[in-house]
Image (tube, rainbow, N blue to C red; front, top):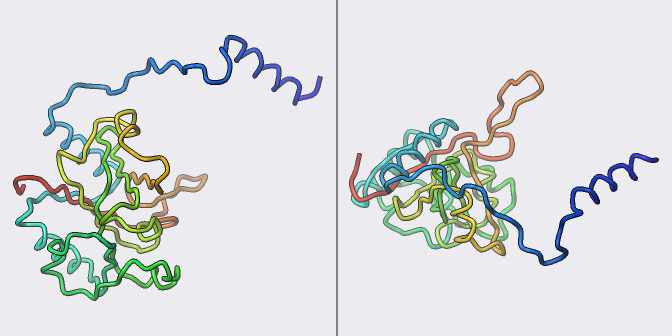
Length: 213
């Protein structure tokens, strides 16, 4: 018996009780691992983002423009990529050169941009994950993958869910979904961590709520 025959045999045995195409898939797993208040959900998101080495900031609507100006200035950013639909007041206090999200932009042009500021579609507390779907204020997928510094604004608690199973029904699978858990990082066989390999080296997350903290 060949290896192929053995593998196919195992698949047939494993699916012997399958009721055929279109059969309902049991989804008896936990959809969420705890009951949380909105504030607890946001705190868990912040903790998991920090665990992934993202820099987390909290502010309210009145303080957002000043905070973004400060974060860009501390980074030494001279240019900032601005996706279509980003609320103009977010960057009202910043004086960096604005770069539009254009289909014609080359990877080299995007790599020359110092920072990018986006919103998000959702954030998942239990995994510390941000989800972008290319909607207003988020732009094309590549603008969150090529520039070295990404600032992502999350409206809390409205854009925060507990878990992945809660997030999926709220997202359109036909849209270009980008799932971000911390800054880009990888490690080799010796576990030497390298950041910025396939995305931003620095991820800053602004939790935009009703009161500054």
